[in-house]
Length: 503
RNA sequence: GGCCCAUUCGUCUAGUGGUUAGGACGCAAGAUUUUCAUUCUUGAAACAGGAGUUCGAUUCUCCUAUGGGCUGCCA
Image 1: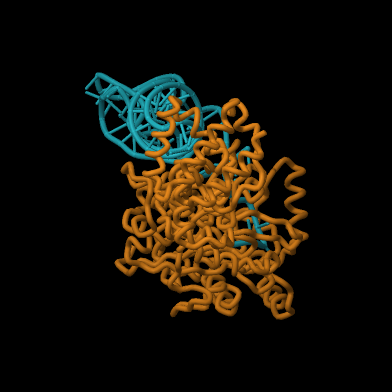
Image 2 (image 1 turned 45 degrees about the horizontal axis):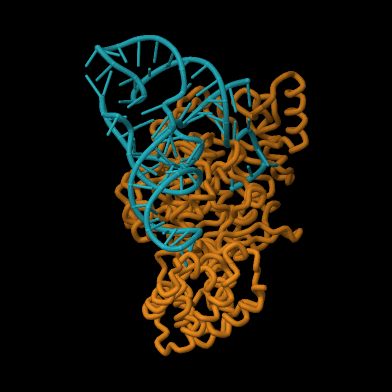
């Protein structure tokens, strides 16, 4: 609550690829920092050594970079509060845990995992679905509160494995004001004696997160709603250390589009949309599709994500990162979970494609097609077909006849309009073109109108035939612009080959 | 089961103690177009239910229902 400079962190766990819910949490942290002239940092929470997945940390950093969510401190970046990977901070945590034990805020517990499992199982048999190590049950367990002091001392010196558990106070209401939800209150009788320090010498999330947030001078903790139930316990920890408590904001979850429940990594490929920012391959060779590889622009992805749970209160829907940085406030983040909508995501992408210059699209098109056409030519292709594309790759498909000469014609698409006199008509039209030196769209259109007027025919009776011969398609952009783009020689050639296929 | 959180069109959401409850996606119709796409116009579509407070509640309170999260030596 102090006046100190805003510092926020995104603290992912490297247990796999970062999914879009995580990206959104990172984004809101980033935007909050930017809006408040603060600092956004990344901290890797890898205190669970058994769940470490190689490549995950690199994936996270690459994904954030792709999105333009750039931390000013973090692994591989540096900063004066490092290291930013918790496993590299390992030696720092034990003294804090010990401090809590000395101050009677925590205690040693010697119960093994097997013993705990047995107790839980027995409780379940007696109709208690969830046994907790808490203020009442701890007195019948093996810990420094129940064992004689000399035995505790002997066990520790003996090297017996132990954990350090928080000594949850009895019947105390913990209240805090969440920036999104308002006042939240929990009684400590409903909280258990969480393990703070594990027998493998690593802290749990609960300890590490408090210690690091304090040491890194984090002022606002913006994280997923799944942390809401443990927030009171975290507050108790800050108080136990005598530290300032940061502000909290618990973001609503991202829900799956069908049914209910939170969006999971399986939903994407099952429902046909990406859940991850980038492609990810599991050790087993299983692939999860990413937005980047699907052809989404990072700006569109980010814009969509920003609006999943936040809105500016105006009718503006298209926001650049810069605009988001200016407009974002935590107060305008909603409380309820948001179902992800793949259609809306496509719409955003389409909008961004529409607003990307032909020049830039041409470069992308060149990259994905390896076309031999000049950038200038490709620019025209983009100009002609971008209105009917969502992704750059759609331009290559929609405009394939601009990039390549059609090799096959499907006569079925035109057969209904292809009357007896069609070959004759097209041959005459070809003759008109042959005599043309001015192959600009406007001029060709004028000549075409002259041609059909002479014949007393309507546009619809003639143009589709020409379109078919030139493009092999029944629909598409303006035929005269296409003709100009292709040029006289190519047009004449295509009329010939098209005519051959038409009967 | 316990605890916590949430609930406005199908979806994302705006909104106020008195509004024709607004916008966007999607959907439908129409206009434009040689055509498809685009664009434009129009339309259908919502305050979970019940009490209470109030002259008046979508808005405030409580209850119910529904949904979600948490309930590990995971984060």
